[in-house]
Length: 153
Image 1: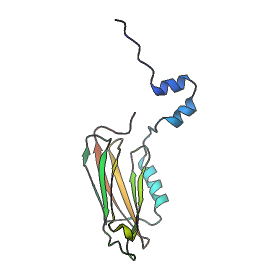
Image 2: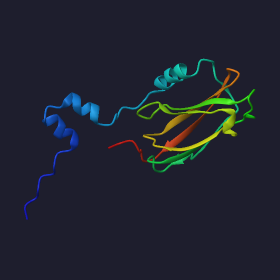
Image 3: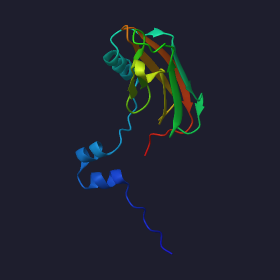
Image 4: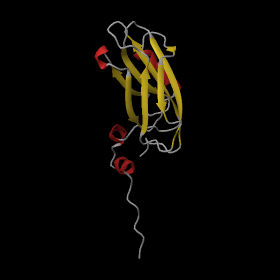
């Protein structure tokens, strides 16, 4: 039985069709953010210098599969009108885009805690910054080792 040649990948097909610029717009961004990209984004999002403390990140130390990694972030705050968390920003220094998520909170949130699942392309640091109602910001970071990345084709 003759062996059939494999069909070209989506990327090769688009390049063969002369759609190079269009192909890069349609294909996922495979480049990884660098630590300096994460720092730059952090400076854009948060105007005050974050201090360590008050933020807790709960996730796996080793993610065997980066396709869906559970993350819980909590901030020590009474969540009153006078003292509450306004925003929680999650940043990664090795995902294709450093900005993972931003959560806006009010005293009506009742609790300064968010839960989400994220894809992780590679071993990376998660950086979380909480902006408080008094203008201060607090941060924590956590290294996550990823054995199989979840952001590739």
